[in-house]
Image (tube, rainbow, N blue to C red):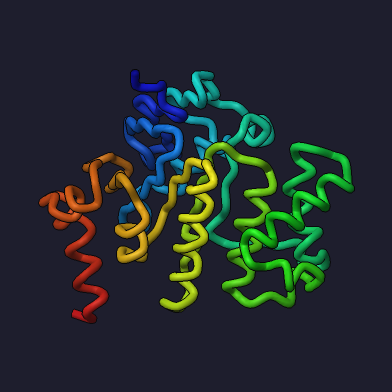
Length: 247
């Protein structure tokens, strides 16, 4: 018997004045899946994340999480229910240590300092960042900042984790480390949706992929199905390949 989706999005739309950033998008995510979300800059990917996570209220449509309608819920309530997320631009608490930054996430669910510290230490160990736990946020390099951002999101104890370009700006070697970590997170039982422009990464990571173009969902399917879709090739993959070749 097929279980209900952990996340169901129905005809979701977000308008900013006369601009429609997300246009009647439908998605169904099953528990335990690792889903890719791709599209050109400005396609509406982060706006979609912002609505799921409660940062933006949808103009219309609905979001159901674990069978509960959470449409328009504020971010703190969405987080308490079990949706965690990272941000494209990492903004650490610069004067706090890596451990303390991670504890901020943990204390959203549990205000007990001792338990939050223990949880944060376990997550930093899990992500290979424990050796930097006493470093200040301002002392971290980009790969470490990206991992700390993931640590802070994981500390909120999510059932669904939204990862927004966690490999942006990283070297291929550092990206490989993140790919392994995302697999590790998913293998631990957490459902993951990842926005990513590194095609090699998103194709190797994702079980299924959704493709947005100008706010509209134009394709979904396995990495192979999406990579062979004529509209996806025309609107995104072909242009991306051309830019990567420097044409």
